[in-house]
Image (cartoon, rainbow, N blue to C red):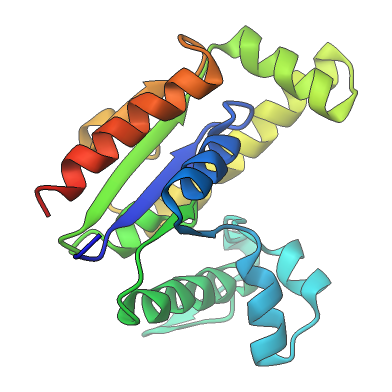
Length: 199
């Protein structure tokens, strides 16, 4: 690819969005930035990985935080800004990559090569996937989905100027359960390649 492309993939919990991002990254030879950036940040900034993981993609606790001008004492907010800055630094290198979550569509909203995707799924399919993946009961799976999606929505909506999952603000939204997983990936790759030709 001659011009830099940044693919932002947001996803509902259980929709296989992260797995889809990994498959696209592998097929297209792109670097994948997800939770793994915490490992690099921990090494670079000499911070314990467990500490970074605790506040990863977490909405800030408004009861325990204050902001004065540009400065905040919210650990969650500071953590988010550290990750956003990390991603911006990666973009400055000119490499093309995929970012999962982390408000990528907002961080890079002014980037000419941004392609933003939101992955959703049928509720029952998501429940079944979570039950199987984590070996938990149906009620536990439903609770896990609701808890994660609520946190993701709060996190995104705080750092973005549009609502999480609002189709009007993504280039493409897709239900991962309407086709086989490999077919879904092919559809997305076809779209991405067509977009890359226009960048």
